[in-house]
Length: 298
Image 1 (cartoon, rainbow, N blue to C red):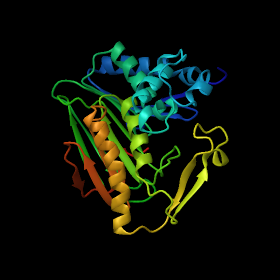
Image 2: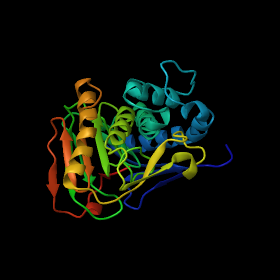
Image 3: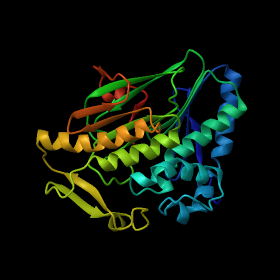
Image 4: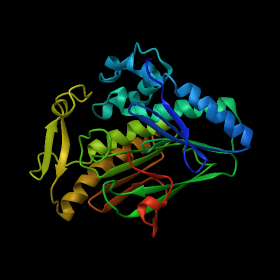
């Protein structure tokens, strides 16, 4: 490794920022001061060199997921394990779970070093959670990351199985095969939530619709794991019925995953409309989107 990652406390003195290449983490731990300090030190140690570990196995991480793997790294194998259950639901590579898997790894290092009341690692909207007894975590959902929009809130309680949250869609950091503005998934782990959000967001679609502009992924990013597959670049005006049909296509996928126990819930958003899969209540917020600390959209 020829570089060192950026490691610094944010100006609020509570949250830690770790950044190395495309990996950009915001971390917060709560508990005794010495425990938080130990957790942050552990996070920084584990983060250093992690990107190089992933780059060493990048060709296989960019290949379609198969039942068996020769991947060696802890995070790389977690990525493969996270996407493997979804291989029958559509094209997916271990890269679909990279953000959630990295968040899990850093959170695991923190919990191995200290006893914390609560902690989260937010990797660009894909979040790994730790909740001690009686704790809860509130998440803000933004329907569009590129403009002010409707804000809704999700609350995760310690007695629930949810410990991972991830969001995918055509406005995110990664390419999408579908047209969803955002699909947010709740799951037992961040890596599984990350993979599921990708699959569901790809399923929110209207194949062949003339208002949807698509382009081969490799024309936009030569080393994309999606290769020649067409990714969504723009979505023109859709009728209410078309929006509903696209959302229902994604909802069918989400229901299958929910019934198989792979996710705990999902929120699908397109053109201002929303569908919720699972038991979670979504509350509309009056605050502007940027005011909620844990607002998420990948």
